[in-house]
Structure formats: C-alpha cells, structure tokens
Image (cartoon, rainbow, N blue to C red; front, side, top):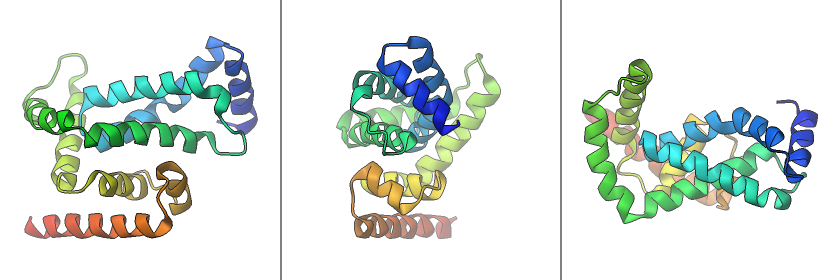
Length: 181
C-alpha cells in the first residue's frame, strides 16, 4: 500500500472512521494471520491473534508514531501476542491435542486451504516444536517472513546479538532435526 494512502487511512482511523480502518485491516490481516499461524501452528488461535491485534491497533492507534513503519508496529503487536500465547501453559497443552485434530480433520468450508494449512502446520510444528518461544519468533520473522535484523530488533526489543544467537540456535536445532530425516 502506498505510504501516503496508508497515512491518510491512519489519520482518518484516528478520527474514528471505520471504513478507513477496515481498509487497513483488509490490507494487513493476511500478514498478521500468516505470522500468527506460523508461530502458533493453529488456525483458530491464529485467527484469535488477528482479531486481538486489530483490536489493540484500533484502541492504540493514537499512540502510533508516524516516524516508524506501520507494518513493523503491527508485527510487534502480533508477535508479542503470539509470544504470550506460546509462553502460556494452556497453549502447550492445547496445542498437542489440536495438532492431532488438525492433521486428521478437514472441514468442509474450504477443504483445499485446510489441507494446505494442515500440512504447513505439521511441517512448521515438527521443525520448531523444540525451539524456545524467542527462538521460534526470531526464526519465523527472519527465515520465513524474511524481515531484516533491524526490523526484528524493533519488533521484539531484543538486541542484534540476542537475535543472532537465538537464530543460530534455532537453525542448529532445525538442521539437526532435518538430518534425522
């Protein structure tokens, strides 16, 4: 989206223009869903994170600093919500049950997309289930979302050294898993 158009939508949204905010949501919802799904490996939880992310954006839009990239701000909110979810014991217990259900079940709403999501979920979950939440988020942001280290610093609040260390450990763990196959 053109930066001038985006800034216009942000300003209008700050004035409670719901149509402008809807345009922002439509433009960024796939990005948030993609990140959330890759981190949580759960379609329903990813959808919840998308909703929560845009609720927080709507509530806190007045605090958005226009000298920052809007997408980085969105990534920050979404990744923090995912990180909180990953750290919660509820997610860890629920994820094992949901993983099995997702692999064996395909809903009739959109069977092809569900199959793709199920396969992607299985691959990501298999490769990243031994990573710490910080390693997982750094790995997803850098290797899958292909963000630069500087943007990951802004999103996670980690130093470049911490990011590189977590990324190294994540890659090492995944490499070891791939060697087994």
